[in-house]
Length: 261
Length: 200
Image (cartoon, rainbow over all chains, first blue to last red):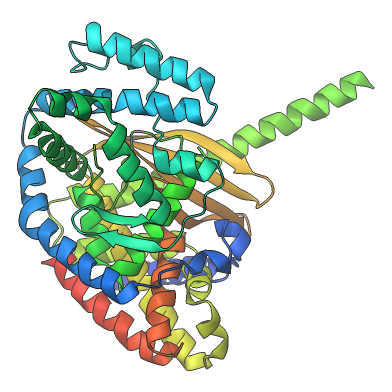
């Protein structure tokens, strides 16, 4: 009898504690300042939404059928191999990062990135090992889209590119500039090895995708409007990159996006 | 006079540190409950999710976030619709966070940095999650209310969960003429689908 009473008391006490805590949680007041946002951020200029949604569906299907399974397979490779591929690809990006840092007037960062490129290309065996990180030369990302934004160029309209994913007019222009000016790609084309260019893009896509398998699935499986969720994520991430507020360079963008190398 | 100033400064400085420590300790305890739930093989998938949902409901300002992400539609709705929406939203939030944390359950983590945002009276705590090939930083936005802490947002790679949800809900609400009652149906269906996936 007494045992039953104790169990009942325990159940009631537990329920009461749960309800009391849940009620306290319900009373917490929030406002837009808490989230550092305004209603303006809800409005992204997306005049071609129907077309974008169609391309997005195609990209999503391509990701499910091709990219995600390959990325999952890639993730099963020994971690030193994955790190080696990632470091090698990051190192190839360095020359254009330096160019963009100079264009944005970030002299100190440009010196640091140049140092990274030299150290990793030599001591780091063609960039396979990130030796520079260990001596305090941190990786920083800059691209033409960020440079144009720094120069005052606006976003333009939102656009979903086939296979390449979310972008906007400014960042697409930046991507084209990357295509035209990347010295590594230009060298490959001059040497008659143009096939290396799409190969590099594809390997980079798999490498980047392998890092965000769980994040993409969490977003995809739990969104009432996956398209809008990806669009918002893209803008938030790009704004942070442009304002250089990102202090987590190692964290890739948790949405499907293929960068042109 | 200088001594008084020094004493005041030291007390204030220590108070700030104690406050940050206390917030971190609380957050670590709650994160561990969620991650341990994933490691506990004795729990069925349904019970595991229910335990996680309970932890999230107790520690997230679910109602406040729900109102914020609903935007204009919230004001136009009646009491009953709002109540149904809050219940739906809380489950939706739990499903989102549970799904995200599931991916981190077999990794190690550290709370690396804690910063108090005076202007918004919010504490930002960075959680670095380590894997063999790199790390991910998740920032928790924590607000104090009546001497208790509550999470008001999660930020991964500079992407706020709440801002993303607001944008997503805004887009879907437009399709149903900002009718929260109709939106509740959409949200309920999505929750059912997500629940199936997380518990299967």
